[in-house]
Amino acid sequence: MSTFDMDGLDSMQFDVLKEIGNIGAGNATTALSQMINSKVDMHVPKVELMDLKVLPEIVGGPETLVVGILLTLSGDVDGMIMFVLEQSSAHHLVNILLNKQLDAISEFSEMDFSALQEIGNIIAGAYLNSLSTLTNLFINASVPYMANDMAGAILSVPAIEFGKMGDKALLIQSQFCEDETRVNGYFILIPTIESYAKILKSLGL
View 1 (cartoon, rainbow, N blue to C red):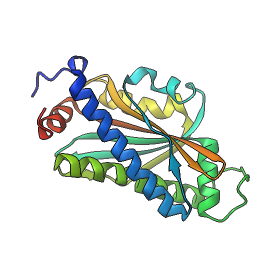
View 2: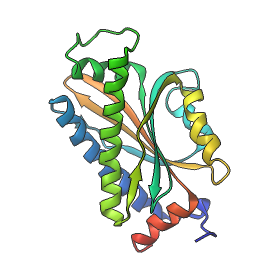
View 3: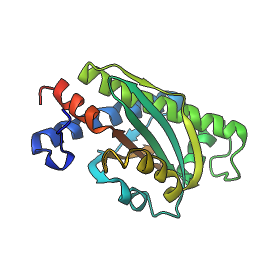
């Protein structure tokens, strides 16, 4: 297990990781729809195994303002999962949830932060439940930590923490559609190398 090499993933292993991403994002869409009590559709998510150092570029560049909700994972799978939203998308979701004017954009209040933390918790939880069910592995998630900052600063946290163990993250880029509004969200799953191997082994690969 210790000799697992992320760069050596074969096409079947990568396809399985992509399928896990697709199913998890689908369940997260259902959870989001129930939470805001509105029909939410999702475009087929884009799933890629990415270098940690390029993640800020994917979400719009290091200086792009985003909201990041981070949960650390323990149990059978160690690592982190981060849900990143463009700031405009975060405002839209909060406005729906708190019955505010939909196009209102102002500084996030404590109540807004609390709502965003709950959104991240539920969406990431839906994704992790899918992963746990598919692999039959126990995955425990921490209380969510939330930050509102530039993408470069927020994404440096998992890069520093896990860069010494590996340099790859599974990125699931999803676009949720609610009426005419598109909400861009990014799941970033960063298990340890050992946990990646455990996930694939549990699936018979």
